[in-house]
Image (cartoon, rainbow, N blue to C red; front, side, top):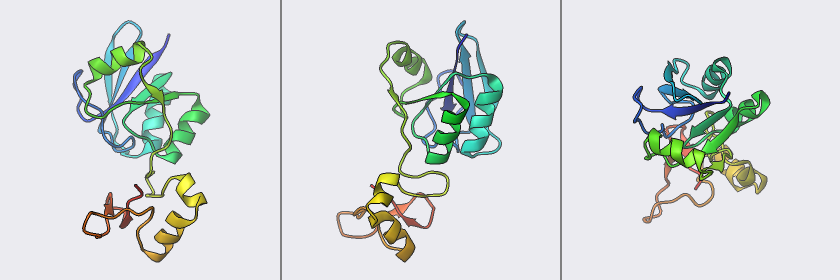
Length: 158
């Protein structure tokens, strides 16, 4: 039996996904019979979400994004991770999953520590920009101003 989880904003069957994996307030869990339950993410971090999924026996999770640390933790536990658009209600996501319309997850630009994609770091630009407090990957507004990154105190990798 498989269990499908969703990182949601609300504890409602028609909720949309949280824009941040670890900051999702609720984890919706759906089994093969269509039974739905909710777990509150009191830890508000990726490790807490993965722990909830592991304890619930989830086989798959659908989220709008996932950071590198949570992605690695999911891989270690054997839980498959899928990406979906954040604004789509869960009932539609269930259908999309059933029809193979979701793509396997890859880590997002920022994990809970605010780091950039490993590919950006490999190029040196993002890591060097973070060390000097500058922008990484040309993340600037049209007027040339720096784009602040998700409250992490650095500029966003885009």
